[in-house]
Image (tube, rainbow, N blue to C red; front, side, top):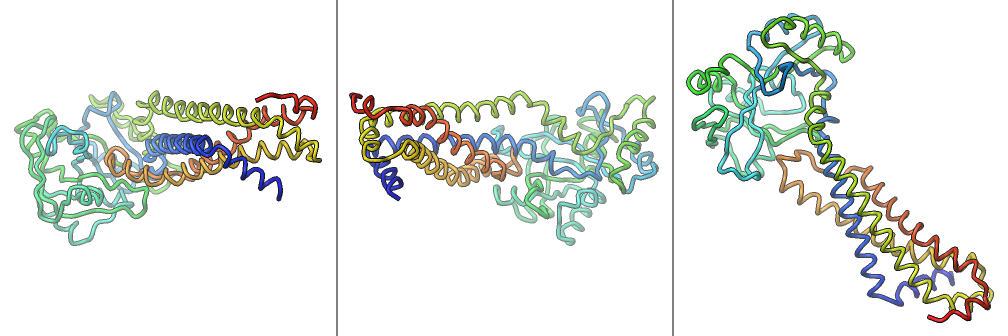
Length: 387
């Protein structure tokens, strides 16, 4: 108990120094948590992918379309239970600012919500969506951000498909769990196909990619090979892969950025380790004579090590806890600001564990050298120490 009191007293001896050190650790843990959350959220779509969905795209590149006529041939392949399709629609909503960007996708209204079962739409709204050619369904987060409501008209200026486009909000979809992307807008592919005859004839009767639902996830390799084999000699060859692999291909394009963020997060922890180590070393050096006196009074080397390590861990743990608590509101605000870039932005359990583990590790490592030096110090040498 006496040692714990001494640790507390030592902690309060230089209040400003201790406070600034804890603040530095808190900021480091906060930065680490934010960067790690960016890394984990960037690939969240990969983890949320369904094992029972395959994606068929153009073999050369995702940007090249596929003929609509492929659909019936894919549906006839054994193991396929449902086939839907989608087409990326670029364009500008309001202005060119990134904060006004959100995914806009032309889809088959009859099947899209059958293959993406993680999205739910009220039946009445879904029926209205299917009836009205220029209608759309928007995600719940878009409603929260822009205040869309049923009947509103969303004006988009097209670029790949030029012209002014108007979409009437017919419904709002929400995810069955927090991993679902609620930042997209779905509209009828027929509307896009009709107008493409005038503004982009090259895209008429073509789709961006096919979404294939299979009955048995173990049949994914066989179905993929069967699909690609059908179109092996066609002008538009295909590449079929699991949805997870498809999502991973997009994530891999920014692999260097993600790796850099991970590296920076570890560098931050390393810098704070050196700062805390310097603080602990300074404190221990100032108290060398005091430790010698304590040994004279009967304190053992174990007690001296406990004083130094205890103070180091006390500072690092408090700083780490404060930083971790601040991580949640900061990440929540960051995620809300960039909701379309990170549809799911939450602090993972692994990030919390790593952050606190690093805080403890920093406290332990920073105390090793001064604790070792003080423990091996003789009483005579300690009393001779000046400053």
